[in-house]
Length: 164
Length: 252
Ligand SMILES: [Zn+2]
Image (tube, rainbow over all chains, first blue to last red; front, side, top):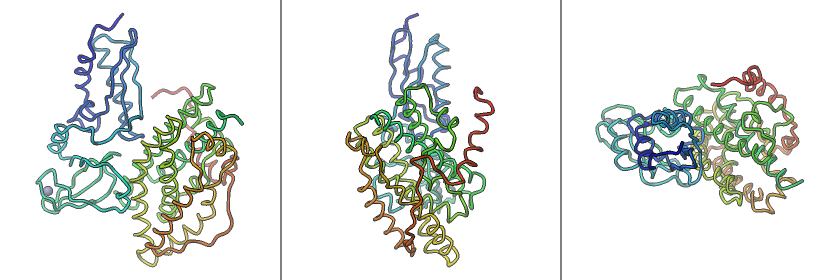
């Protein structure tokens, strides 16, 4: 059976899928969903991982298949691509605001370069009280994409979405 | 040796090294010296296993015999494994793990920097992706080298001992053979002479700042390119492969 939906409609539908680890933003806002293609009666959905070992990818693949099945599309292929490599620059400004409201400090606009080898920690705004007096506890946080910080004013620990 | 065979072999070398060091790091899960380190090592382990998945999946495609990444990871014995010997060395204490990880991370950082320019599109894509992650790994292990090396007398001694023990495995990082020669000619992989120079510079800088001495060990242990491993790999594989081999068709 041919697919009667438009690509825009599929995108809109898939925007209902939240990131499994950060449920306040969806897979489009996060930049994981790259493309939707129709090949005959098959719907091909192209996604890219944030980190290569991101365990959320399998969950996202299943969520996509379930969503499309709900509207009657049975033949679905989810393709994983590595190029172009995902970058935090793809996270929309609106989504960054959602991250902040959720308690995760959003990534800066810069991408990693050799300078990070020097380990210079930068001023990060506490997502809870807005103070810039914060310090890094660990480069590695609750998931591969986050680092752990704490606020020296309100004393709360918080996640920082690492630049990549 | 054909280009296809050389490429398959090279992908196994890269993929196996990532898989084995990733598995070693995962052994720290629940045993880290502090909570943050426990989390950090497991995050890094995950990156390595992810990188290995991409490489072994591609290796299976290049080979063209219908093997996927799971077949390659779980159904090969130790003599078929091509990981660098340093990656299979036991975790030991925290100084051992940090020393092993730092020496390997620095190697991977400069190697993957070159692989980003590979004329093989898939290898280049994997390298671009992984290099971003390795940058974080190397920063992390470099900082621990400084903390332990330039820390207390006890931490310094332990780290220096760890470095001394591991040093004989470092020359193998830069060995090249027919596989490399074929792929270098095609612009698919870099000449490791360049990688070695960058690695030595980085290691020397971090060692100097961490007040560590570069070991004078002349003995060079090698063998991974021919599948000749230390006694540790068999035990590691037995644990890693047990479930898959017991229930080969299990679906999760
Ligand atoms: Zn605060």
